[in-house]
Length: 245
Ligand SMILES: *[C@@H]1O[C@H](CO)[C@@H](O)[C@H](O)[C@H]1NC(C)=O
Ligand SMILES: *[C@@H]1O[C@H](CO)[C@@H](O)[C@H](O)[C@H]1NC(C)=O
Ligand SMILES: *[C@@H]1O[C@H](CO)[C@@H](O)[C@H](O)[C@H]1NC(C)=O
Ligand SMILES: *[C@@H]1O[C@H](CO)[C@@H](O)[C@H](O)[C@H]1NC(C)=O
Ligand SMILES: *[C@@H]1O[C@H](CO)[C@@H](O)[C@H](O)[C@H]1NC(C)=O
Image (tube, rainbow, N blue to C red; front, side, top):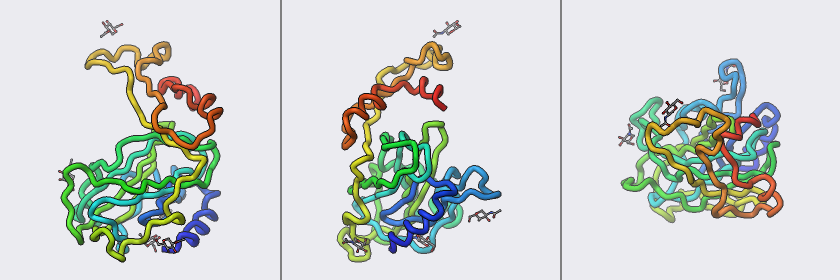
């Protein structure tokens, strides 16, 4: 696939409004579109950011494989939660999968360099298939990257694949040009440290009790300067974040 061409095309569209751009193993196409049909932007549409199933699938290993994408098209993605899920088969709408409910990569946090659009790429070199998935060469599936933005809505972007034997030359090579981690994008594991029993929900709607649900952004974060970590990523309180929005 002509990535440079894709990026040039998308860069020229970026002034309009953009979010996740899937790089590897491919993409359903450009859904960075805001028009009368999609006044809030196409990529917010579930599933797959409003694009129908591709007729041109790419090949992906039956053992799982690389997924890479650019998370920072358009502003407002300094932090986000990310998921990768997969739908199997072609029995659903538009000859796509019946659902996208199979988790490949559970939630983790993106820590970008700025609220403004940024060009970096995230590479997950070996995204596993969901536990218990049983796929054969020739099976079709759709991989979806979900970016849950700080204001609570999610962006969706998909690629349609066909499974191939690992090492099959039909599978596009994974290399430093299509799967790399930018030094200025960090990630963090997500933990819940306060849990409540059913019925113990008092306080979650009250700003005064913002500690009700707390996520700590420690863990395997990488490649962000320490000062940035200290000032921006001290343990953040989700409830408190609303105040910034
Ligand atoms: C499929 O074709 C569309 C339209 O030409 C293109 O935008 C998209 O990148 C292609 N997808 C793959 C996975 O090659
Ligand atoms: C908006 O863009 C989508 C995707 O290209 C297209 O299907 C739709 O017809 C467009 N709507 C208008 C009103 O142009
Ligand atoms: C989702 O689709 C899979 C097949 O891909 C099926 O086994 C599963 O039951 C479906 N789940 C739901 C919630 O419909
Ligand atoms: C990386 O792999 C792609 C195919 O996925 C290929 O088109 C490109 O030339 C390769 N780049 C390098 C630097 O090897
Ligand atoms: C929740 O708040 C209500 C009203 O203040 C109170 O009656 C109730 O006992 C509280 N429930 C718990 C589980 O704290």
